[in-house]
Length: 280
Ligand code: AMP
Image (cartoon, rainbow, N blue to C red; front, side, top):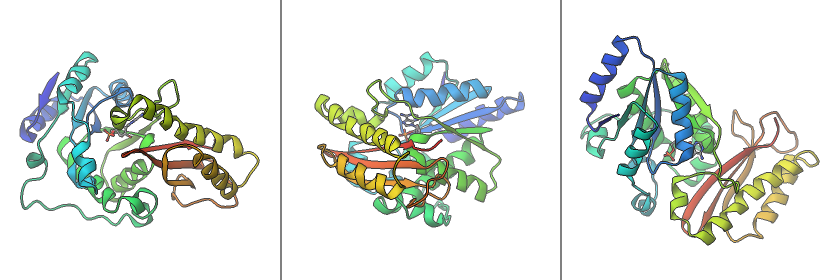
């Protein structure tokens, strides 16, 4: 497996692969890889000739300096894991390589997508995501790019961005991988104690309760009941919303297909995000 930190060398490799007619699958990550990430890599490997994974903890998408500082970094182990599954190449640039001085950062009006949920609680987060993913797309020019539905709103933002910029890239949304306990796999789980991991299960229990209640109550009623239930646990709720999967606007009285419950909660100082589709 090839490991690149420099853009020119990576692009030489990609040009060579493209000249041989190969399709490029791309999986952007911030590293500290787990099997959720690996499921994206496996999808890319099964759908494309060449799979490239980027590992870059993007400072511009963190609105909290402490969160950025504490974000787990395990590059050596990540590279080892990817090479054991025969991934083709890793791109692990430095901040300077990704963001040279005097570069122009992309400005895109994300409308409501940037104001709701994550946008409300992490101001500027999606500007950072658009900034890094558009730059990575420009560098890699993949055929298909793979994103996890665990970051539900991010998938909407990336899909919107790709359409808006007319990029010839197919965005593939992949399902959330969970531990047997139901806890969504996340790099941030590394920061949880054993007790924290048990406490964090309350997130999935609450989402499952929402799904159960959806057949008998309106979205507003389900939201109220689940918030009451959630507060019986020890996590601190940041938000719980039941949303239209396309507009991400909250549902009130009517259910629609694809209605999804999205939740963010703190376990100590670890911010955890999850969601579950309530109506198929
Ligand atoms: P991250 O490294 O957290 O930025 O995640 C990189 C990609 O992996 C994103 O598209 C995430 O949505 C996806 N991802 C993270 N956790 C999971 C999971 N448990 N299952 C599936 N995909 C995931």
